[in-house]
Length: 357
Image (tube, rainbow, N blue to C red; front, side):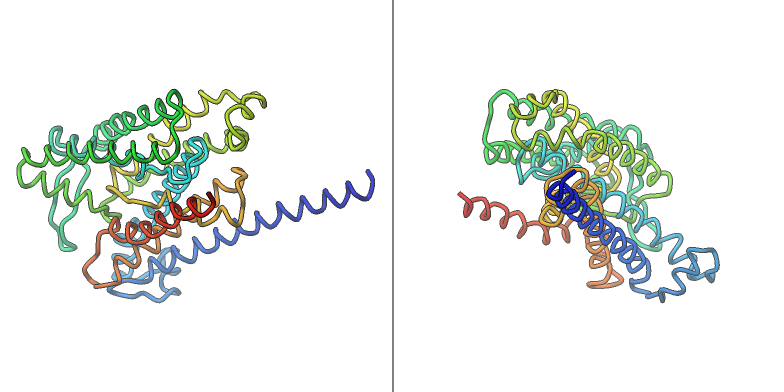
């Protein structure tokens, strides 16, 4: 090996090392944000007491506040944010559309319609009152998730067919997703119109997006789904990298592009519909997270995928903390907070594409 080869190897290792350091920094920020999310609220708990409580040495009041209320909420935020982040990352790659995410191409809205159908028609969720206010209880998560997945697949198959057989531009695909979103929203409205007040309240409350209605059994289901989907995506990183050069280039490298596209969208829908069925509609996390980290880690999915997941977890943790602090003790809808953050980013991506052209 000559000197130029040695230098190239060293440069490559340094290049990869910087990406790994960035991901490590994101992981540390996730842990810090997680602890702050548990500590801050209408009743602030010092960080040292948070750590003591997490290790089983908290007082009774601290145990109630942290272990019963804030810890499940924070864990849900990490799992949902990570899942939505990697889903958006993969969708943008396999559709080659920087505006693609579960919330912008109709997948979330399809899942929302399915979950609303399960809540209203099949009795999959009910409102309940408690000392902390109204809560939505998903009393039949299997049916709710299956319905959410089934209707999210309608959007997925529609987008896959358009992108595969019609060769539509990114903007046209996005408009198709908007049309599907409107269709599913209309369907949800009709379901609410014929439902009783209790079930309508459950659907409306659910569509706001809420991280505080999940129990540990619900969190376990979300965790298993996010883990399985993450493993599948990790094993397909090289396929996603190949598809960045176009379909012909990927085929030349031996990638079965049709299989990668269809299975990728199915797995994305599975993760998004599961998350949506438990926490409601949370917009733009999957859109924002990949764009925030792509500048630092590039388009290599070995690094972009975990970075997008961690960025999504941080974003949702911060959004939930803001939602709980702005007018405490009232908790604002988390979906509204992420939409406020996501709408400017959405417009920026659109105008950025115009400037490049």
